[in-house]
Image (cartoon, rainbow, N blue to C red; front, side, top):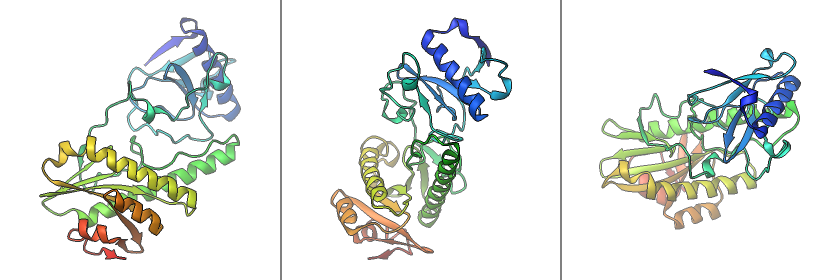
Length: 292
């Protein structure tokens, strides 16, 4: 860690630092600043590693944010996409900012993105609450009111917990003594001999719009992971793609997923339900699967 005098920074960064100081004084919260896509982002959450960041703690401000503490390495367990309260403030609102990118575009940035390497896990370590990786759930909507921001965070955290618990529950029903378990960037990859089950888990808020978005995400992610990420782990095992939802989705979405070689599974009280393709794909491994 090292102190970085503002007079050594460029004008755009100077403006961003001033903005961070203003927000920190106003909200009484710590704000973080980092560079992304040629612009600067000011937010109440740390960036994903290995990006460096400047930290503006309101307790250390004396008349003005003349000096900031800047990290020299990435932050472990950074809460990406989860602000402590309120939205991220991009340079769109700062002098010289273009606003063409937003604070949530890390996944869309191909160059400079931190590689995500599939890692072996166990039933005790998979889907750990608070992990730095993308939880597979939508970010909170932009808000300007502090209380609304806190409520959005609470809802987001609750959804992340439900997501992770569902990952762990599905894994626990599938994994046996001879299987190998992996995560990242996918939610779950279980290699069981000649079969590898590749699964994405999605929570639902009960609205039609949310189901549409989560179903589209699941399909796109599974097709991508099947091609670019899972083969290095699965080897010669046949990859069977599964989209697992918090509750049953519409038959139109089930049919659409099936048409793309993806089985649909959903939580049903203390067991799992699924379509005919799910029974074919994982019925042997998921004993309580009830086909509809």
